[in-house]
Length: 259
Image (cartoon, rainbow, N blue to C red):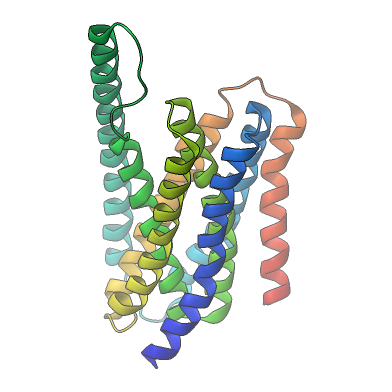
């Protein structure tokens, strides 16, 4: 049974893995403008919110083995982890930029970045592993749930690939380095998905419920506190805001067709 779930998870994971790589390549060879990036962020946020509202939260509510206390624990842990991770990433990135500026000032001229921005990359990597584990857990809960979660996360990680690549390019890294980093990040989704099946497939129902609630908090944080907030950093246009509702409606329609 578990081998079948592993195969199914591997097949579904191909899509977010490829999406991360495609996002990296697009950013490297044809970087999108700020308005395009903001539109993608709106669309991805709508997709994630729709997956939460249509699949993840109803599944938490309707499971026969549902335990409210485990849902609360998982959700609270998810919020805490995302807040701590965000604060750590900001401090780490600020420290790395300060060191880079100090080194550049001491040298007198900029010779390119000395090291990868590990704070940002670790934060993105953790996000991708969590996303992959949600795909793996979705597969164990049912084919429809796994499919909808995979579609939503594929669009989300497409943006993460673009975002990471643009950040690295902006700091002066070469295309080859950026592409290799994108490939490594993409593989983390697969690691998370297979790990999700192995660790959560045979886990007690309470553990599955807790992790599903954890993932719900992580996705909600990503959509509201990251994607939408960053999208509003550029001048807002009506068509850009409309992309959020387009993403939501498309996933809602897919859920209706799958059901």
